[in-house]
Length: 136
Image 1 (spheres, one colour):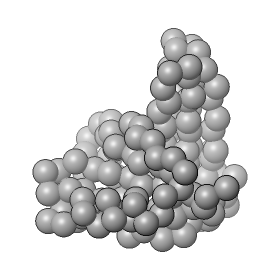
Image 2 (cartoon, helix red, strand yellow; image 1 turned 30 degrees about the vertical axis):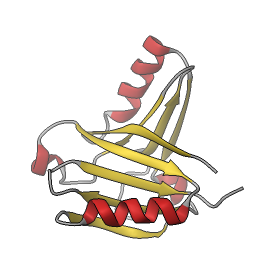
Image 3 (cartoon, one colour; image 1 turned 60 degrees about the horizontal axis):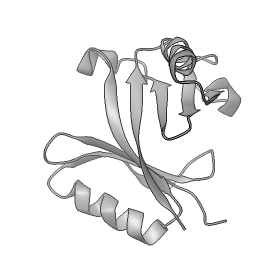
């Protein structure tokens, strides 16, 4: 069992691939990119980045293109604090705790990639993502 915390960058549509490729040129590491088309997500640009992850020697971070229209809400790059791991009970409890006094953007639920996922903004305005995989 494990839990990790990583930053999750959210770029304006179409900028994630360029940004993450740039970061890889600076930091090295292994870059993986999945598009909305890979998951046949309707209403999204097929070549848009649904999820990118750069794994370096001592750290990793993730990113995606913003959902259409969201740039109008925040006007720039957003950063999410992201917990990922396989401890469903603990991570679900943390999700519920952080949601108290805040707002849930996406409740914890099973997603097309097979993991349980949710997003919330806590009462201090910080945004959190949770991606919970099944224990191997």
